[in-house]
Image (cartoon, rainbow, N blue to C red; front, side, top):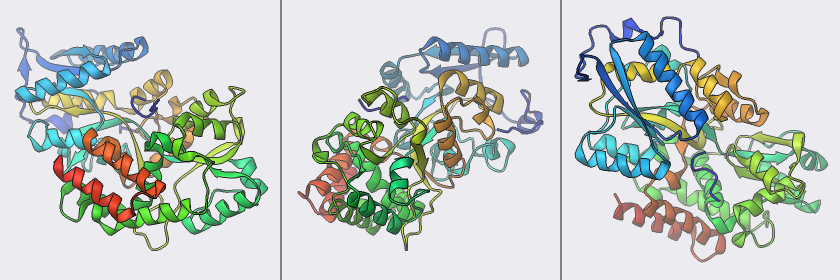
Length: 431
């Protein structure tokens, strides 16, 4: 099962009324029969905990802003996607609605279906309440169209005890040292990296991260904006070459090309492999997939993907994903004001405590109960650049080819250049 899919200090002046931000702002809001500003709010929190949280925030906001009426629509994930797509075709999107950011949101923004809220974010207390990188997931062409509230990252999850056996008390900070570690683990008879290559997407993360460390934000910007060579850019081809070079050292378990993600998680959870590159859900899946159903407990730690010598990407750059809210083109300033309230530190921490999300707001980690999630939060909070998983950033017709192409590199049925050319072809056909 693909586990990624669903899974702040606002200054005192940024209160429910936020007068300085909204004074004099023009609002073309829909009105109710009694003249109240009407806001349509769609979310996918169908569980009682989620519904109760959102309704509580809505009730609090309306009580503090009696001129506002918020109409809430709750839909299951697939029904939500279908109905939002229909509304987008009609040109009448909800004012505030669930979004995973990335390519679909960018298409809506490009079509003029979203509201540019940059002025409310850039240089404001609200904007400064989250890491610059997480805001980027809800940007298109430098403008802000949505807000993240739950964002995790792909990191290396490793067994501290197994690394200590080969002399490592901390995870390598550079790729060169990482390769040395892999060699030492193999020499000690320990499987260095567990990989569910049969599910394809786990391998894609390693290739994506190498590209990020080599080419940095610029490599992804030219890809997304269509201003360069796309997937044929040297950063993506070089990433493939480095992944193939790693594979030739045999760092993965036997049969990794046919293994599932749960097989991968079980190897780490049973202490049979030293590490895996995976999202914030990894500890739970390792535990569930382990023979004892306990995982490796406090032997587990996490670390950022290492830096690459000569690369322009930073070790603080993160690939990951999560959840947020987009703003429809007809949304009033009051709708943005509601979104500010929804994502203040208190509410972000509260939602973390009841729903297990990784909150985006600085200081909201007080609501995180899981220590591993706090470690991921610390890494995400430092992100200057944050890239949504590539296979989810693009439409399925492109994302599927990305995953398939990475597997062809590992299987030796295509060179990195050929694999990247296949990705670029799919991208151009589906733009």
